[in-house]
Image 1 (tube, rainbow, N blue to C red):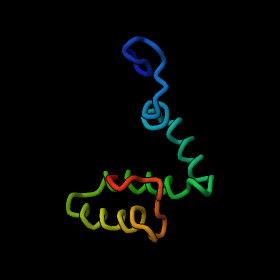
Image 2 (image 1 turned 180 degrees about the vertical axis):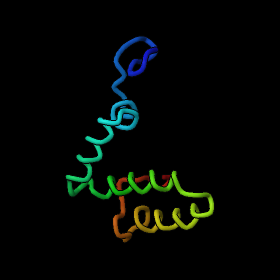
Image 3 (image 1 turned 120 degrees about the horizontal axis):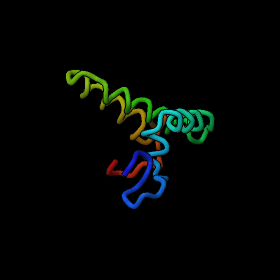
Length: 87
């Protein structure tokens, strides 16, 4: 299938295609998250996860601890309560 289309040839409207794979879609979605107070923590988490993915292996453990305490722990500075316990 050509880029942006599913196996059956229809337009791909998945979140991944629209907001992750496409640079302009990704930028617009990130700006939306950052501009809405109720979604600002989700936008910050997305940025931090992308930074984590670029970390050197030696920095990953410390970076993961910071992510957990900031976003995944109730009472964390930007706790994302919408995340499941398995996240």
